[in-house]
Length: 463
Image 1 (cartoon, rainbow, N blue to C red):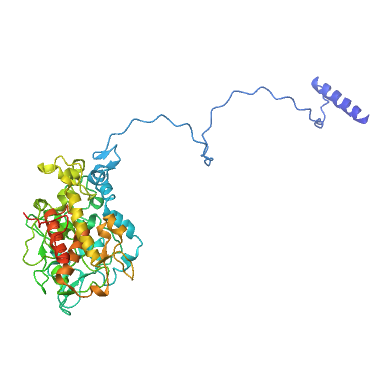
Image 2 (image 1 turned 180 degrees about the vertical axis):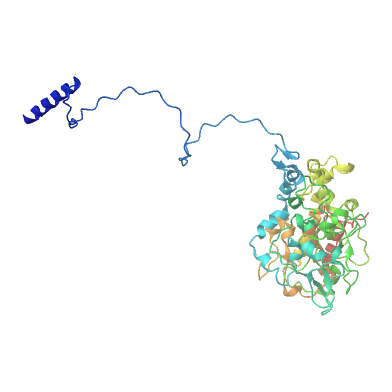
C-alpha cells in the first residue's frame, strides 16, 4: 500500500514539472526491466569475409568410376607393342627359338638327370667327367686348366687332346677336371665364348648380331680337332679328325676318351665293366680313324665324310625362322639327307634298307663276342653273358665288357674286336655315321673271333 502511494506522489510531482511549476524533485529510482521483445527481421547479408586457414585433410573417399581408356601410345622403336625387345625373341627366346630347341635335346635331358646327382660331387676330386660334362668344360680345357700326374700333360689341349703318356708310369692316362663348377650342363656358354662385351643380356644391345657368340674351339676351314689315338705305342699326340669347321666343337666331346693305340696292348685284361671306349664316341667312328685297325688292312670312309661341317650338316641344319642359325635340338634331320641330291626320296634314315643291314652286321659281331664270354649287362659279380632276351633288343649301347678270369690275358686282336664292337655300339648310330668304315670294322673284328666272315657280310667291303 505504501508502495502504491509512493508511485502516485512521484507521478504527481512529474506532472507539476511538466507544467513549469517549481516542483522538481529528485530523480526517482529506475523501474523494473520489462520483458524482452521478439527478434526483429534479419537484416541484409554482409559481404563475405576473408577465408580462414585450410583445415587438416579428411580420410580418402572411395574411388570413383573408371574413366574411358585413353588413346594407344606409339610403339617403341625396337619393341613389340612398345614392351618386349625383339633381340630377346629372335633367334633365341621365341617359341621355336634356340633355347626351346635346346630344351628338347639330350644335352638338356642329361643336365636334368644330373641335377643333385652323385656324378657332380666327384668332379672336385681326381675325375675326368667334368672335362666334357661341366658347364665350363671346354673353357677350362682351352685355358689349359686340367689335372695330370707327372711333369708332362696332354700334347695339345687347344685342339681337343685330353689323354697323355704319364711321365711317372710311361702309360696312357686321362686328364682330370680342374674347374670348380658343380653344374653338369652343356649350355650356350659351354660351346660359345660369351662375355660382358658380347652378351646382349648384359650389353642391352637392341638386336642380336649373327656370329657375335664365337665358338670356343678353333673352327676355321683348316682347323682340325684331335681324337685321342696316338701314332704308335708310347706316343699320344692324337690324330686329326678332319677339316670339319664348326663341327670341331662336337668332336671336342663326342670321342672315345681312350687312345686305342696305347689302350689295346699285346696282353689285355677286361678288368671291369667299364673297359673300352667311353659312351658317345661318335667322332672316332665318323672320322674313320678311331677304331682298332688290324695289321695290313686299309680302312676307308663313306661319302658322309665329305660334309663341310661334319656333324653339324646333319644334326644342325639352318632354320630360316631363326636367322638361318642351326637347329639346337641336335637331333639328326631327315631333311638334311634329302638335300644336295643325295637321298631325295627317303622317308626315313633307313635309306634303301642300309641301316637295317648294318644293324644286322653289328648283331653278328655281338653274338660272336657274347658266345666267347666277353659281354655282359650284369651290374655286379657274378657277371653273366647276355641273355637271349638281351640279344633280341638290339640296344647295343647297353652292353658292357664282362670281367672274368678267362678274360685276363686277351691278345691285341681279340681285345681289339671287343673295343671295336663297343665303339660301334656306342657311336655309329647303327652304322649311319660312317657306313663303309662300320662294315670294315665288323668284318675284321668278327674274323678275329671266329676266323670266318660274318653271316650277313660275306666279303670285306671297300671303295
